[in-house]
Each structure stands twice: as structure tokens, then as C-alpha cells.
Length: 174
Image (cartoon, rainbow, N blue to C red; front, side, top):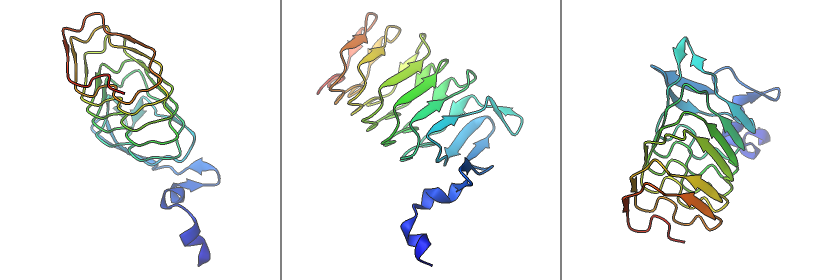
């Protein structure tokens, strides 16, 4: 009786130190939701016979357990707020992500590294807002750097913006 109130509701997804079989949901190749409580989350290239090509809006949002996410090479799109407010998140590998949605990593204050496609096509407004631990980003293929893209990234030392023709208001405000 007393155990229910002392355990986070997310902890019910772990049995015997391992994620339960259905820690994530998928629909037509889109990872819709991930409730993993493991510190390292490796998303398979295929779920239910469908290649995973996209991370849905808010799929990982608010997950306070994951420290590292490894997305398969099949993922090209990271949705809006997909990883927002993941307080423990430090590293993301998304080697072929060419589209990063609005506020995708907003509030991930411990995010230190993110690896995405060198051919990044677009990043939404506030995609990396308040990622205070990020120190390097490559936007070399982006023509437009949207509003609040990296605002609050107080550790950001290097950002390649060599092809930017438009830098919207507050893109790099601290």
C-alpha cells in the first residue's frame, strides 16, 4: 500500500532492471512515445516490422531517466518538443536527422553533445533553447537560423553559421 505513493509513476515501466517490452509505441514508422527508464536508450531501426524514420512530437518529453539516446540511422526527422525537458539527457546520437523540430531539445540543461546529419536541412524555433551545457553546434547548411534557436545556451562556444542568410531575433540570446 505504501509503495505506490513512493515510486514515480514512470517506474512501473521497468521490471527486474529492464524496460518492459512495450516501453515505446510506434505507428507507421514513427516512434510515438518512449517511456524508457533506462539511462541509455537505444531505439531499434525497426519496430513491429516498420523502419523507424521519425521521432514524434513530445515522444520523450519530460523523461527524467534517460541520459543518452541512440537513434538508428533510419531516423531523419526529430519532431517538435520530442526531447524537451529531459533533465538528465546528456548525449544524443541521431546521425541522419536532417530536420529538428520546434523546441525539440528545449530545456535540456544537461545536454552536452548532439550528433545529427551534417546536411541538416532545418531546425525549428527554440530547438536548443536553454541547453546550457552545449558548447558546439554545426548549422553550416542552414540558411535561416530561427528565433530563439540557441537562446540560453550559456556554454555555447562554437556554432558554424557559415551559410546563414537570415538570423532571426534572439537566435543566440543568453
